[in-house]
Image (cartoon, rainbow, N blue to C red; front, side, top):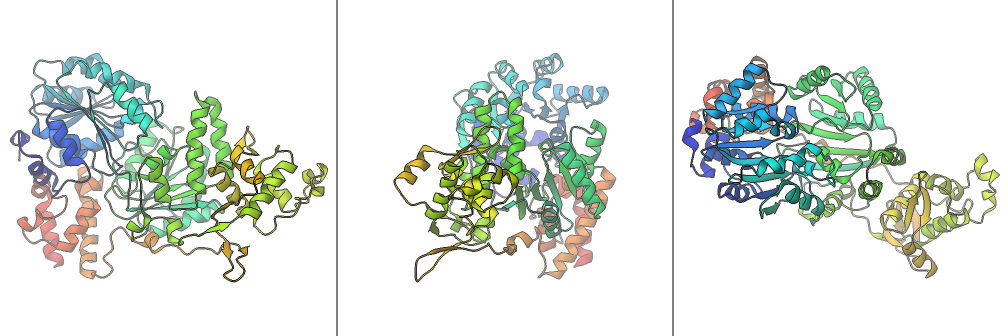
Length: 622
């Protein structure tokens, strides 16, 4: 079907005929309806929630141009390739485009052949783009701002160029404005509305929940072994590993490569050409794993990333949520593993000297510390941060490592807490957690002896807990506002709340792993936590045909065909079909064109382009 034939059609018709989907997800229909009637809208939807369709479908229905402001060249390229594959005329205009192609794209916009144009925020303000959009033959119907959180200094990825968008938007007062983002706290939402000049917008907040992503947090014991275990759980699947520094990225990449894994690195220290080459190989499944700094991944739409590993704790919940959101964008089972250590916190705080607002940076970091040290459902904690409630029992297929280990009852931790606080006080409230714990465990280190702290009444009284358990207890007390870390060295001090309970001899009760209560005496005892077995969810493959050998064979044959076709067309495999579509084909094994069009994600353009090949494979495997 030609693009011109879609003008004025109902959204449901475009959804099925172009994109091959039977129904809308989340808030898609409401957002699309808003855009079609000219209602400015701010939509907060999770990564992988289908934000792109919210402007792509109206763009095809409108008799005019939709301008999409996007922060990264790679994101524009990916989106345009996907749209072109579905038979939609879309282009991107940025510095990477050769002048001849750039001129052809502008002419296609002037002639009305192109319905969607992607530009960067800095490109939007150039005279070339400005002249194009003000051409009398061009009618701007919609301005969409993707990654809209970049306009807020409270966002995790503030970009000054986004502040110029409002002035351009004011030049097209008849155009509807749609702002999209996956993460936005209340403050960020206010900033988006104000800084983009949205006109009395609807604010539509979808669920932040990504139920297909299993959340796991582990103390960093042997990071390499923990990382390798995760990679092996996802044999022959794509993943991203995030590291703190370029040095960490290069070291880990070299170590994994030496072990025989398919891996490349990505960071600002590499040339533009090398970075582009590595990203392309990852997108095209020529390499399985990308080890990167946080700069990687924002601009890709690869749907089959099955695992995200954080080698180092992120600096904020927003950053963490954005990065884990790059897993399982197609809705299939995926995993997010976060490794953390106390050293991560010091690394992050070291960068606070370069921060314009240290208090804000510390507040964001505290949210991350509370998350990793929490003793209750990770998903519940994550969604609570964004103001959303969640009941773990509603997710029967697995949620996180905490829920997987089973519920922890509250226990009376008064005695260990009193010992810890007493030791903080008796050492003068001048030391960090590591030193205080050394005193509690009776360490004979020179620094303890020289200070005479081996003579304190709290020296050696804390042997009921392992060292790591004491650190866990410190984290819990900080999260509950009973302790605080101050200064560059993380000096432990007792808060007013902690002192009040301590002086009143009140009880400190909360869940604590490794603690158990005797059913007879009621006495709390502590054991070294047993090593947990991995959840069945962690081993669950994204596509599992273990009980259907015929479908398994067909799926693998379709994957081979997709890989070869992608190579011939010089595009990433998922541009042709995603894993979810291939899995549906393998399960249904269509024999006719009508049956083929019932497949998930099979629009008319793709059925016309690839249908004969797919049906031939299905008939051969039947």
